[in-house]
Amino acid sequence: MTQERPIVLITGVGRRISIGTEIARQLAADGWDIAFANHSPERGFVEELTLELHELGARAFASEADLADPLAPEALLLAVMDQFGPVRALVSSHAQSVDSSIHDTSVESFDRHFAINTRANWLLIKAFAQHYSSAPGLGRIVALTSDHTTHNLPYGASKGALDRIVIAAAGELGHLGITANLINPGPVDTGWISPELGEALRGETALGRLGTQRDAANLVSFLLSERGGWMNGQLLHSNGGFHLPV
Image (tube, rainbow, N blue to C red; front, top):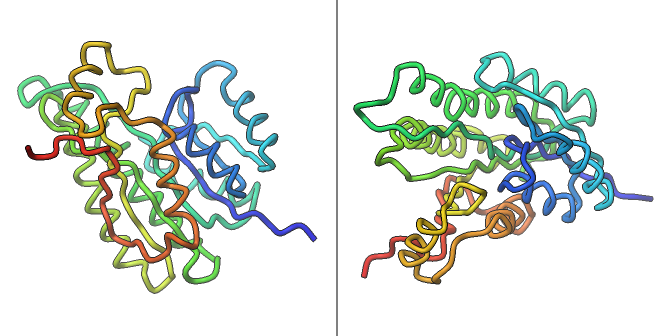
């Protein structure tokens, strides 16, 4: 008899080169069925990734969701449950990120960053907990975060608020046997790092290289596994020693 695969919902999976996409691949190889969400995905990407996940033995369900809409998070979770059944893990890899500083950030940009990076995650976590039905000790929440702040004010501020929400979830959802952790992956080149910036960032990292999508996916894989079940309420800097004091 084939053992039933658990279901994970991963947000922020809409591009061929992204942390969320690599997480989906890794978890499919680990034995999870994959529901992935995106907003305005790259052309042909959804079909390509769905086929790839099927080849890894996973069922795959894609949903386009605008997480700036406060109704979208629960609607997304319910759509996944309707398609696959109960969701055991939530991995938040989506983000709004538009560089701006204290002086030139608009109110509209500030509010959109907080709507997507902060409020949507609170509502996703809330819906996930309300509908959670797996055995205690198996539930997992992992969110990708960042400590970038200077000249990236709304992104950094909204990610800082996300950190507090996830740590609150670790304490408030413990009675359900759900763990909640954050990963700060440091600088990972998903297309935004110029050659000059890449050289500078490698020089600031103890291991002398940039992070990869696989580095982040490996840690998510561990946190979602049975072996990672004692990790809870942690903000993990998986960054190769970025900005270590010298």
